[in-house]
Length: 72
Image (cartoon, rainbow, N blue to C red; front, side):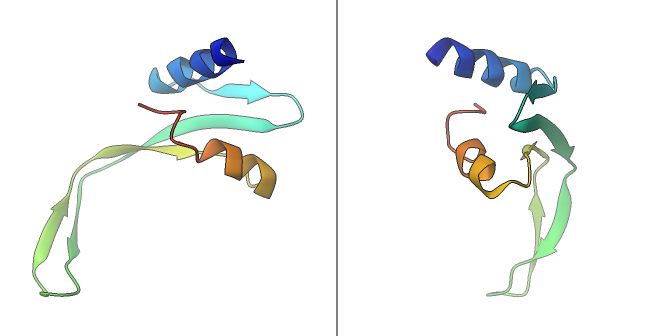
């Protein structure tokens, strides 16, 4: 099981898409840097670019996918 999770984590970290029969397709997407407003102070802040997980919409699958072990 650990080898399977490591293979999935490594594939996602490399930008690949992982398809699991009966579960769904896991992938990542890039988010660009953007500016937002700090609601407490009203000042503009810069949010850095990042990678985000794109997971199946199945409620059971999402609980598994949003664990801390899939992306570094």
